Length: 331
Image 1 (cartoon, rainbow, N blue to C red):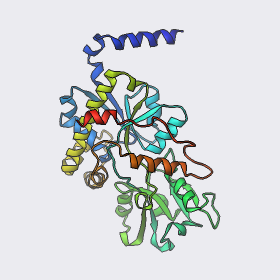
Image 2 (cartoon, rainbow, N blue to C red):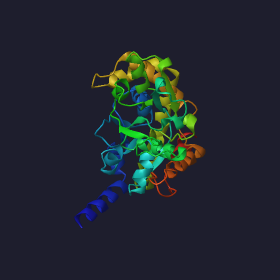
Image 3 (cartoon, one colour):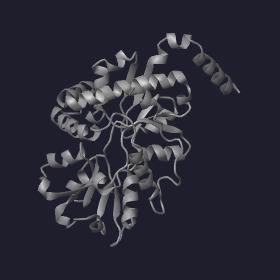
Image 4 (spheres, rainbow, N blue to C red):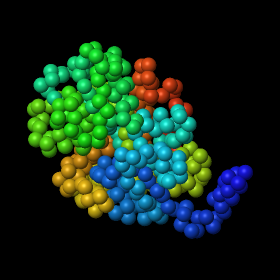
């Protein structure tokens, strides 16, 4: 009952103009899905260049990491909005967390498998009998779906693949524990090259080229919050400023990388790595004005539903995305 009362009091507070006067109506907490790096440059640029400020917003960017699950942070009220890969978001939605995609700054997927060429792998059918490093925490879904479409079991054996649960580094490939590993075009692939491996020794399979790419790095909010006109207005301004940040980052990649470095409190990132990453990220955001392309969404859903005996989602999602925010933001 007490909870009901506080909810009612909160609803009342939101309904009163006073709530908007204290600035809370203009504060936005964004939960990133990984550590501070050029993958999130658009948001840091929007903050640094005053694009959020121009929209009257006070934005806090919360960095992520291996033990931070953005959907949990969003569910617990620790953030107003999160970045997430669509497979993870749709899986969370089907499990009862009503997240909604309100914008899609990334048009193209950066996910790929990077394999040693000397293993003889030339096509996905050559994965049979091989060990493949796959990230989990929601990132495994596109891979499992792809193998299902290829008719390859993920239970090992000569006709299946052995899935190695990959950590967030490239060691399994370098140490030959795996024949292939998961890499992002903008991050781990560069780490393999940095370790002294030449591109000629590798063969890569981009999910995008295999027709099993799923949407990455979308902006998500909770369905209930989107019912509040004040929150919706805040999101329109947030998306508009964020996309301005992304387009600036695309046009000025080196400056964007510098801005990211200034925001990296861990001090773990290097200038060379961030500049290369930003160059690759710009290829993925190119062609997006922030609005979700329905064909890309349908392909993502089809890929996830095609997961064979272990699909990521069991039915077509309803209400998992809205164009209302981007329609208003892009006017």
